[in-house]
Image (cartoon, rainbow, N blue to C red; front, side):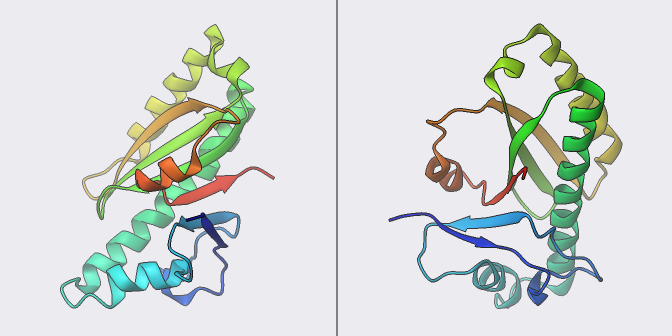
Length: 163
């Protein structure tokens, strides 16, 4: 069973919250062949009769907030600390809780200066977390042995790589 990767586009109407969609560089990853990001999100949020419109709107809005925050954080991390993030994985724990897993170069990760990245992460997430949105940020050194399938199994289904 391989990883099926589909680029989310602005043409995906089910991802809309207001007038925004996920940035086009985000990828949705799944193991199931033939299941698209639209199918997966529809199955959980839109076809489940127990999921109310408020929950749908909350989830999509919070996913957009998490992905937007991640992109802004990458820029700040590079501009303020000189640390380039190679990729970001997002895991949705529930409607309001999301986890960012950022991969960085091993040299940056083991440097003494990397402590400043944790400080920036702590300050940044404190500024964005609210009663209806909670974000955690973790870092991981990049490696050729990084197991994308294991990350997907752990729930990190959205992925962004710097181009």
